[in-house]
Length: 214
Image 1 (cartoon, rainbow, N blue to C red):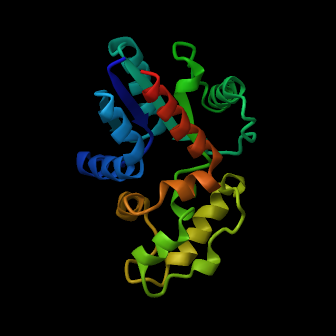
Image 2 (image 1 turned 180 degrees about the vertical axis):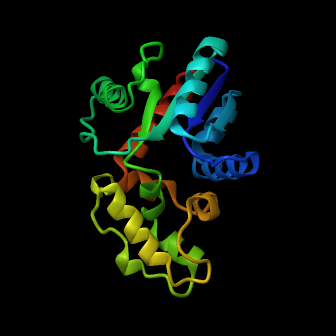
């Protein structure tokens, strides 16, 4: 193994938009990235745009970059069962979810290299209400945000609606994925995200274990 290569859904349609999201995710994952560098491992985060494009880029990497730990990271889009703590069982559940929902064939990859943002990346964003309030400033309605401890149980449309209402009256305006997500990701606390988004905790823990075992 000489590199961690993560293929992520999102980033919009242009190279600049993809670069901005990559910068945001790099900052959110800075602790893990630093561990990879300490081990002299390469670190590549590819924001591929649409989920199908991310899947296809991941499959291509499995064929052409066999010395890397290639990882797929996409939205679940819909509910998925809770984490059990059994890494093999949870990994199989993630693959089964994507096979059933998207019709993807992931047999070429070890299941533990397939990860999910549940039910969407915005769950990570609302996990740190303090960072959001600081970013949006005056007019931000923090009382509108989801309060449930496990944000992965929040229906996707409800989460989008609450985030929109919380930001609507701010100077930056209503939350927009392309306009705001990359900047917010650079400001939120990964520890807070892990506390309220179990699949994020699983993802970062697995990355850390993979790097430390290299």
